[in-house]
Length: 178
Image 1 (cartoon, rainbow, N blue to C red):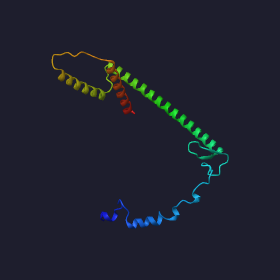
Image 2 (cartoon, rainbow, N blue to C red):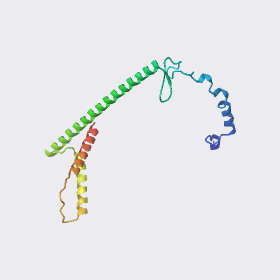
Image 3 (cartoon, helix red, strand yellow):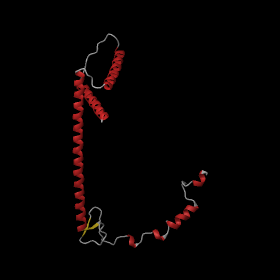
Image 4 (cartoon, rainbow, N blue to C red):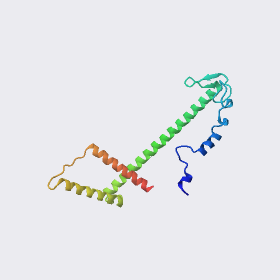
């Protein structure tokens, strides 16, 4: 089939589409009549004529005193429930984070002890480490030239960066084990 037979995305209405719209949308049956509106001074919550009417100062809505008080109390109870749930979720997240941090610390201590004993932590991690360190050493040698000594510098910023990198590696290893 050709595209023109199924083309319904025109920017204007055809005469056939316009006639269909006139029969349904422009008729008297879609107009709002008196039954569509609440009588004056009706409560918005219970849709009945208000008993002891109370008006909202900001919007001018009218409520029954009993309806609005019960509605406000229900809203307050729901807000308190949501706050408690949020607080519980925060506590769980903090506990999970502290647990992960302790697990990372334990893992890094185990790897350190294994390295110091000459057992090496994991072959994959040491191969990766050896590859990266050898390439960085070669790059440094090429860039600095022959015959010059490098001065060893280790500032606090570098130590923090190294610590952060080690924690990230430990977290990744823990996630891979799980």
